[in-house]
Image (tube, rainbow, N blue to C red):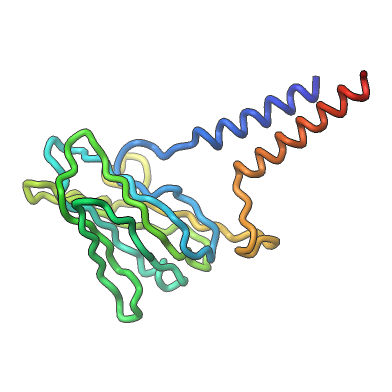
Length: 196
């Protein structure tokens, strides 16, 4: 009985990890969590077109806290018809990153991959962002998240890296769940052998 409960718990953990997706709405950076000090982490911006007219520009701003604590933005994926632009600070770190080009049509979304160097200091880091529409109007996502907020900015929550990994070995929740499943299956097999 206890083994059945354990297997059910393991299965639930795997499903939660596999099915976990960001909320569909507003501009978001995904995944929204990272370990401190990781270099060249690949994330993506997801930006739905929320008006009845196309988007012609999408951009994000990098907070001073992100840069001051060792964070930076790296390369972005090439997207046919869209041109990347960047504005740098005096230290050569990215202040703003934006894309212009072909129109992103209504009821679609842009998804752009890019790399980041994660700050050494844990915390919740905002990435104010904007979308410019074909009529010249700009929608800013620049408000702190909270109840009743209309235009929340995306955030990346940086956690302290586990002591044992220290950036060398990074274990994801999915890896841990799969390891637990393997242990459970081995335990079940051994139990069956002992009863045979």
